[in-house]
Length: 183
Image (cartoon, rainbow, N blue to C red; front, side, top):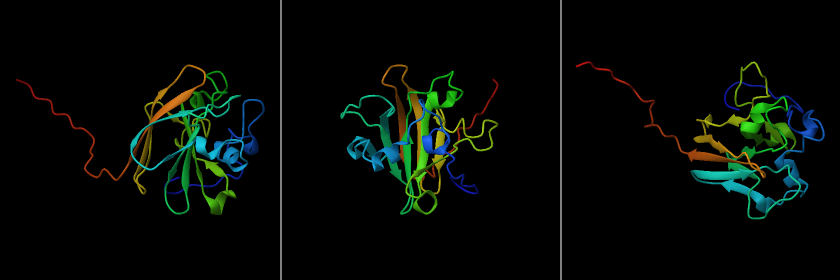
């Protein structure tokens, strides 16, 4: 997503159109909004820093009080989409999708209006199976000043994740330092 990378056409292994399988896989949240299977009013449009709860959208009934995806505008061309899936659990072969939020972006010049899965752990031995932002992990787009951290995942049905979104450059934020002194 940031820096060098490559597009893998139909490469979202969690999406039916990307090689996923039935019955666990669904179309991604952006595609469901596009065909009006998921009302756009059920999507959280993030415009500021805060704590957000996103529910799994791959369930039989949706509650209009809940949000089932989140969007964050990166720039004039790209919008991040965060989604949660409950049909994955630790024994599904994709345990990371059970422990975090799946992130993609809508990038019109490379995706035909649909989202592309972002591998938030590039270079790992698990290819894209661990693409989700797992609990305690942060995805940072320093170019746009967007930082997304998954801070909690429910064990209940319907499943949800809590994520903290920080928007800004945070130039004054530095890693902590430790000084040891003896007396």
